[in-house]
Length: 344
Image 1 (cartoon, rainbow, N blue to C red):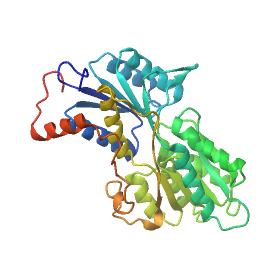
Image 2 (image 1 turned 135 degrees about the vertical axis):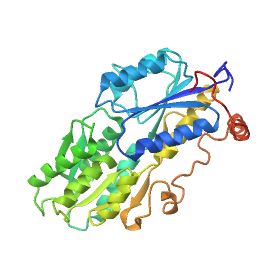
Image 3 (image 1 turned 90 degrees about the vertical axis):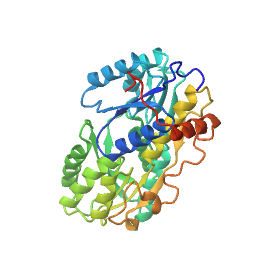
């Protein structure tokens, strides 16, 4: 990889905000496996910025001062992401982000490559499924969970919901805004339970959650309240959400999602291409798929979901067509690489 690592060792840091749920670990597994397939040393750091912002920023500062060639940063509020990544960018390190758009006071970080779930399409697919399910007269009356503004993906999901409401395709019957996402499932359970007390049966038709971690808490609260009159729709899937969709199949009917393991794999390819001097598309969007609960059984998880959704984990053509990348993988497959001292 020309100019990437004069020492012959390419070290990559992976910094992930959020540790709840399997999506985090899916992404990490995809990124680490892809990096190691090219012979890179990959160090992963995962913690919740909501729980400890100063500690998270210190980890980023440590990465900026270390001998990494590049960083993949995952999930973050707009301003906070800028603050975290500014010292990393100033160090000359190449950066790829997933579900983060660093921006503060009119300033962005130049040279950064951003990747996202196609968040607008993701929310739109979920909401269109909700609307199509509704059989009553007039638009469906929807209760929703929303998060405080600043988290790029959740903001985009909320904006799409608001657009549906403006078009008159749905009616927002009520909402609960979550201020603290350090324990999203518990926060969603409490907020949903409180919301249901204000909306007795017959006053709403459906419930919408903009993230699978929030939908897990909402599903449990709706089931505990015996509210079979509400149909739950969401975005995102994880092993836990697939299990609960099957358990609460009369309530949680569908979720639109993108493959987070694939996202980890592809963002590592993007970073490798940046280090090799290739031109990379930015922003890059991962297309969503719809997961219907009626198609699930107890054996389905994120690892075998492609058996139900052909192409779910497909990565053909996603930044894997570089000759040098194939040569790196072929060489790594032939030889056992022993990490040099200091690279462990």
